[in-house]
Amino acid sequence: QVEEATYLQNVHTIGQMAAAFAHEIRNPITTVRGFIQYLSTENHHKDLSKFSPLILEELDRTNQVITDYLQLAKPRKPIIDSFMVDRIVKDTISMVAPSATFQGIRFEQELSPHLFMKADGQHVKQCLLNILLNSVEASPPNSVINVSSGICSKKLFAFISVTDYGVGMTTEELEKVGILHYTTKTTGTGIGSMVVNRLLREMNGSVKYESVKNEFTKVTMFLPLHQD
Ligand code: ADP
Ligand code: MG
Image (cartoon, rainbow, N blue to C red):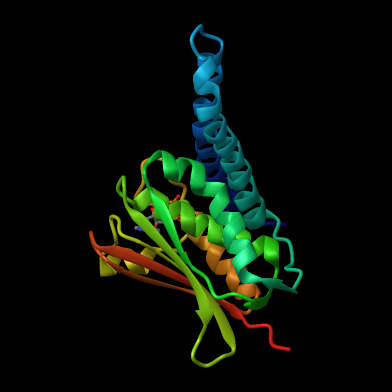
């Protein structure tokens, strides 16, 4: 028999998560609805191709939110394989590029060629996507986000780092990143960074956050290097 207090705590947690989930799913759906409504008006023809990447991205984002929540609620064990880092980085950047471009944000890539990691490719993508989205959300219009990859000096780990020149964080704020439901955004859920922490840890990796308020934020993912 479950204790009354535990039961009530569980109900409370589920309620909070459902509310946050509904909120984050509704945002992109509302945006997509707006676009589609616009398409049913008269003079949309030439704008169609301009908006379709944004519509697709909003839908991908909905998918991403669902993936994050499922990962928390019903974690999938990582399937460790060897994969090429720059391929994954390029694929993931292309998922956020449309809306970043729309805001004048540009990605500058400095990727090590022929770098292989031992990890679950899907999970690495999910982590990187969360990190990139946070960087885009923190960045001012017409700024640059640097993405680089390489080998750590100790040679056991490969890294992928993302640096934005946006709102940044204070020391106090830095300490809270990764706590479930910690968010400073009006439409945030505060689950992305927790998912990042958890997935990386499961793959014997880690994440490091460095930041200076109003200057920059650098997020680095470390994962075991594949050596042959
Ligand atoms: P959410 O994006 O829903 O707020 P996250 O877990 O992804 O949740 O991030 C938690 C918080 O960490 C953010 O609300 C923000 O305050 C801070 N944060 C994360 N990445 C950055 C960044 N690149 N620049 C500034 N703040 C960040
Ligand atoms: Mg986030």
